[in-house]
Image 1 (cartoon, rainbow, N blue to C red):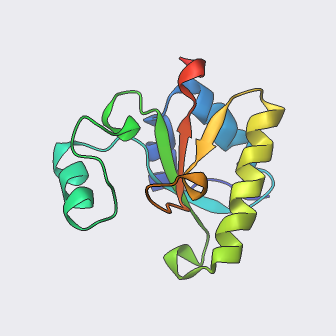
Image 2: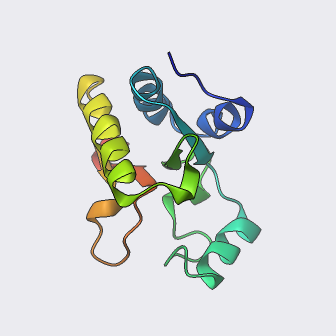
Length: 126
């Protein structure tokens, strides 16, 4: 059975408790790493400057504590994983969210940016 490493546990701990439930449900089915929970000002502005985010500081659900978003990557492939790997992981996470009755949104469905690693809490969950 897969389990979270130290960084994944730290990032998971920065997330809203409902997102933690989704992550805990998903990790038992598939191995992945949580690479972002909360994102501070410097990290958010860097993500914006490099084109990895369309949001400036304060505009992203990553910018509140507890974080209302997380980013994940398949483990051990990471960002070298294929789109198919990310789609499979997204299916696992979306199914886990359904099982724990938490509404989330996936960045692969966004119109403004294709962010296969990103998931966020639906505002109706707050």
